Image 1: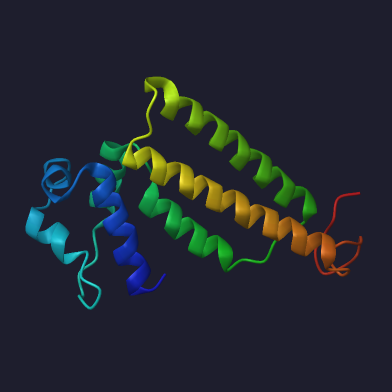
Image 2 (image 1 turned 60 degrees about the vertical axis):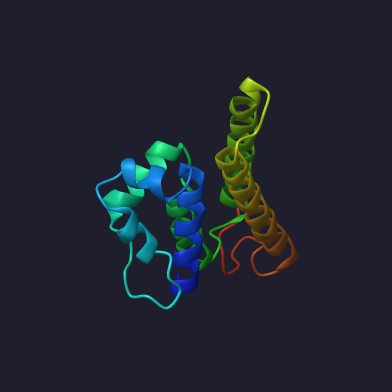
Length: 149
């Protein structure tokens, strides 16, 4: 994940917390420190415990999900079966998150962000499945990737 993506993830997380002041109250660092984590050409990165505290406070995993997606995107798809399972898991997570989000009848900014990120995971899973199905080497047993029979 490049610096710009780290900055975007931190901004999204701070927004989900309700802004810099509220985010600073939810973790061990100051408003000033949180602000430096949002500077595109800066050198400071948020410590892992600060990210964890902010995600717990906001009730979303915006930053860690982006880290996971970047790491996952770099890995080749294992096979059609696991890609389809990942899609089902993400779709179930979306349904649960949407249900929880609408319990009070309105979507908060944090809930919108979390739903959008889950939708992004679903798109990624569909793309992986599509690539597997349309890649002859992966769509047949004995190809580059294992395909369950």
